[in-house]
Image (cartoon, rainbow, N blue to C red; front, side, top):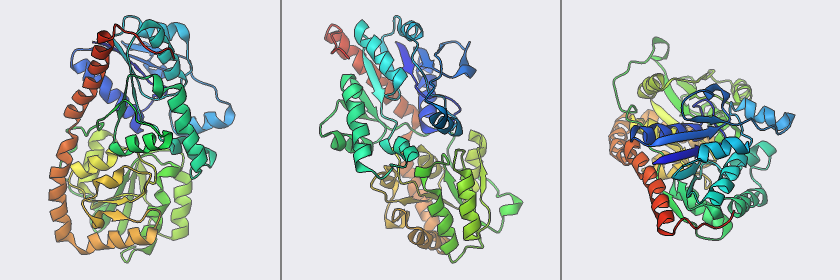
Length: 389
């Protein structure tokens, strides 16, 4: 197949959407498909198969938000969009924003079947407008992206059943979708890694992900403050983002040991996971949390927020792996429980090894590719007749 992948936001592999996009691109190319990527990442200009459009200027304040998150929003450029779609068998759009909408219009005019990912929760945007808990604002986001984008798509790729149910409940209708995890790379496996000398006498608690408001890092910081083993715990935050300064202020107020905060290469991250003692995922907003699955796949036992707006709670084997959303005292109790029960923790690590097998990335990528194939075959059966966007 010839596939055009449209990425409104593409940059460093430090966020779930970019990672999911590039994993799909690499897999499709490995299967022999011709893949074109339409994006605004200037660092990729001149690379084979990349079509670069201008960046989007949203004004000083919003530009700063994107800059802090190290992502580059795209603006449509009609000639470049048309060139990227020329002769394409199918188009896959990662997110329902300006460039994705422009590509959708061209596809409909040319009869190119379109699939689209669902990689953005409303709260990922409304959190920057201080409306994260506004039911009205979040519901209106979902209604808007359905009305001007997803209703014109042939098939929607949902990374979790949670986000499919959440979206369909918000808009009050069923959608043409398929649930397939983004998958976990084979490199994330248990292996013997010695703790660095500075951590030998510490109980290492790890969180992986962007340093963003909706990830609720402060809940984890405060939980350490309330733990009976406060002086024994060392927090590790593997990620980058705009909230580092706020996290460190919270650390100073709580008077706990400063966390190690850094962005890790994939190989270094696997080592970090394997010498950590517990994984904590306090995020209130989460579509899937591949990072949590990566930790689980390495045999690290998780403690996960039971947030009603997060898919990650589905990865809990029982109540010992869950804590009450935004309740640092309850999280502290769960951390203390695992510190006090090392034999049980070792048993759960073995159980999680079998649980993680269902998220094999190669299998998940093949299922995602099948979504594209299904859309292409269905369009050909219908003589490429589509609804006007």
